[in-house]
Amino acid sequence: MITRETDYAIRALLYLACGKPNTWVSASVLATQMEIPYRFLRRILLKLGEMKLVVSARGKYGGVRLAKPAEVTTLYEIVQAADPQAIMLNICLAEGEVCSRAVRCVIHDELADIQQALHTRLHSITLADLAAKDQNRLPV
Image (cartoon, rainbow, N blue to C red):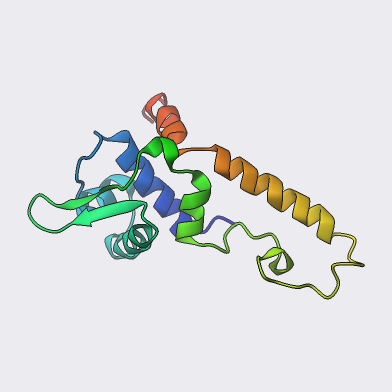
């Protein structure tokens, strides 16, 4: 399940992707524009920074911006950065997990196929794809 934290991370990165390239955006502006609680956003931005999805700078003209082009940042990376467990269908599918029932479990292979399809799809969607769709939407 996509958590609120993951949703906010996607919103924040989408806002940055829709702006002018290499432009610094303050966390307070980002929080206001994307309707994200400021304190929660700060925590999310730290995670995104650790995963090299954003860079930050302090000071009057500082803020955050994308660390790499939106064309190479995938939805999978964003979800993994925000909440690695958000897209795990079952714990038995987690990397490094060994399920004692895998050989006789009728659902294991089906879930593994669904999990792989989900990962493949999330890898195929870039931040630039989302930004392009966002730019084409009519204002509400």
